[in-house]
Length: 310
Image 1 (tube, rainbow, N blue to C red):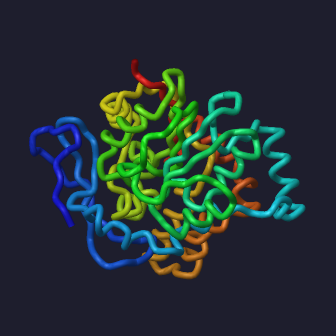
Image 2 (image 1 turned 180 degrees about the horizontal axis):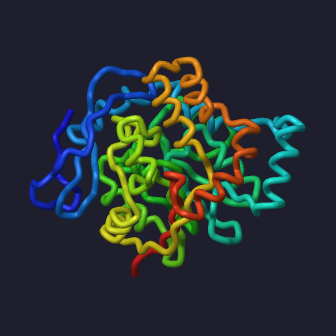
Image 3 (image 1 turned 120 degrees about the horizontal axis):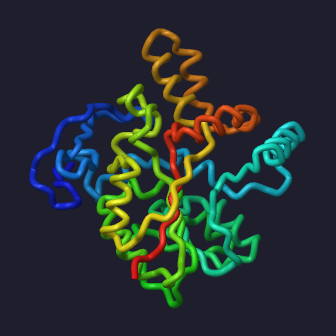
């Protein structure tokens, strides 16, 4: 474990927000989230060192399993019908990407390669970065170029990228500002950066606190609100252009599950906790409620678009 100062080098003036444990894999230890009183950025401190963090990403880590490339037409007829209905009525878009013609794409934290596969099928030239060797090999087995290791060790690209994405990645990084600066060097002047992160400014976070599903201690090292994320982007040479609140109820459902499990309803709680790891028809059937909550910025997850600062 290491004790670290605020990434903005603010004076040492932190307040404790909460203390929690690893709810995702039930690994031992207690971990504290602090808030810098100067800039309001929240971070896990003390935190696992870069050398120790892999311990908290076992091979059965949900994103590694959930991003396996699936065979076409693997959805059931019911799920296909519900997805079609939701897309037609609500203009459903799971990725919230800017409208771009195919070009060069980099995915940071590509896991097992499902998104690379999807974008390659649409004509994009794709590359990935992934710290898990096993997950990366799954993506490589489908023919995709993936750097195995942290972003910090990734080589400079031969050509810059039109689009850089990271789905629930920035909060895992030990030095998000330095990472964003490196991505800025990899981007074309008119490129887009698209990142999704948990929203620690949401009502969910204030209600559930250490039981908030998106907290995910200790692998989540940073805990962003819209304003603190804007500041981190600016320090990393990016300018925030848009915030989209994701239309999903993953956080809410699993957080309720943690609460029920800890208050005598173990079976129902476990069922709700496992739902996000096995998305099915329910995720589309509940989409109208997710759509409503997103309109008020209260789904606990956000996707941002940013442009390189000149």
